[in-house]
Length: 213
Picture 1 (cartoon, helix red, strand yellow):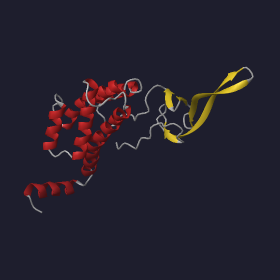
Picture 2 (cartoon, one colour; picture 1 turned 90 degrees about the vertical axis):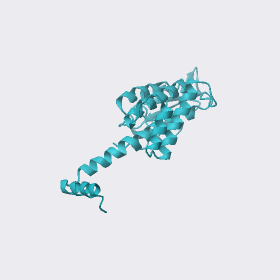
Picture 3 (cartoon, one colour; picture 1 turned 45 degrees about the vertical axis):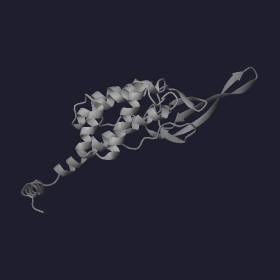
Picture 4 (tube, helix red, strand yellow; picture 1 turned 60 degrees about the vertical axis):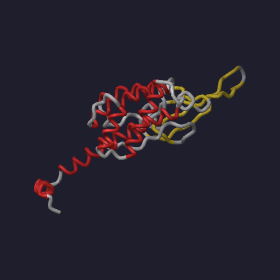
């Protein structure tokens, strides 16, 4: 299943994917005030209402605080089940600890590699093997970003995820991109090919087997 583009919640945006119902929907924004004797006072809090599910999200100084889950995209529908567990846990804790989320996403990549035909024991070696087999450079780069950022989350390095949480946030998108390119697209093309008439497929096999042009 091809994954549609995800639009994460952003402060004062008129439309985005609701973190509660998952639907891309319009949002209505409200300033939240406090009632003190005789008057209403302004606060730094705002609320947005999803037009689709009528649920509220609450924001403080431009950051979503309720629900506490980070506004990051959900896992790709074709992400293998054993990887979904780590992806979902990373999504749940990202707002509280981008570093812990990045470490979990590194583990997610390690579990994903056997689904791409590798051993899953050494991420760096597995990526190298995939490159030898013709892995497109853009997918190699996506895998290496996840590997290097994840390593920096586990061991002190040059990337400080506390100062740059948006780097960790991009890992979610990269994992979904890898799944789309390496799992979803080949599966869709194979399905279309298998729907061809049997005679046509037999002729193709004969052509390729004989080496005729």
